[in-house]
Image 1 (cartoon, rainbow, N blue to C red):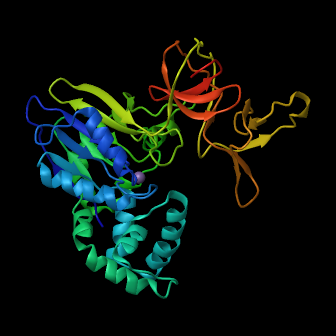
Image 2 (cartoon, helix red, strand yellow):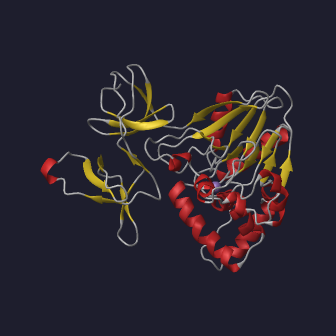
Image 3 (cartoon, rainbow, N blue to C red):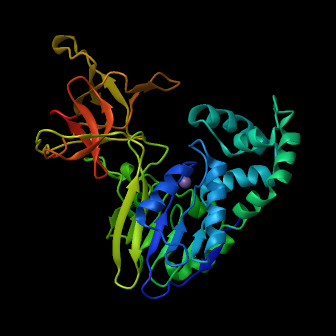
Length: 382
Ligand SMILES: [Mn+2]
């Protein structure tokens, strides 16, 4: 599918709420909109793609997006790479796509407790046991869920407003060349990994108005202190908002709240981590590392000399930095390389009475999140 462009204007005095990468977290979307005080018909709402996959309720998110769009003309739902990926598998099948649908549906449903095709089959009572059975099941599902698939098929790739441009992954061209995108594959804009890194690598010019994107969890851009709040990049005029919902254990679903009249910008977020109350003050550490997917190869050091129960001493391969991490926060790839999960040695600044979200509790400390920022807290909480 080629990219499609939609243009819009915002009525004066209005608020624009932007959400991306809901990834099958229908309940998070509802909680987030309630938290922002979203007013249908008054506020604009833009959902910047990746409604589905990596959560347990992809079908629920598609239907909630359909309901929101039907409720108000000020709602724009946009395409994400996962949305287009599944749409093409269901609507424009090939042998290769059937193989991917078969394998990835089983993997995703097992890992995340849901997947669009899995949920559709479950609801429709359609079953298949082998790749040979899949085409018949797929055809039944495509008929039964025609309304949902029609909705996905109509989602635009780019939304251009006078003040901002919205796109799931990134823009491979300046704004004044947007029309050229309609001759390019939509994936060039949707599955645009590491958009800001690529802009830097190709020394791209600054966009003339903010380009608002999801797709790449913002935590991946932050190399010293883990943070899931929207990232405002003034160098390229990009605002990246993917809080890692569904992909990071400490991730969150962000809502960027814009007021186009005055260029105002705020945000809110939800997650489902339990919260605790800090009892003691803790100062921030001066120097830290945030280790993330894609740059998380480590080696485990012999820590017998200074054993700490429940922890392992590791060395991050790229930086040679050493840190103690929970001794179960590892995984190994097919070639036996060792990786740690998202990890940091940052100590969060904390005041007594602060509300902290508990990411991982250890006997003597915890990894916590405060206002979207993640780090260690080594004092008392309740
Ligand atoms: Mn994506």
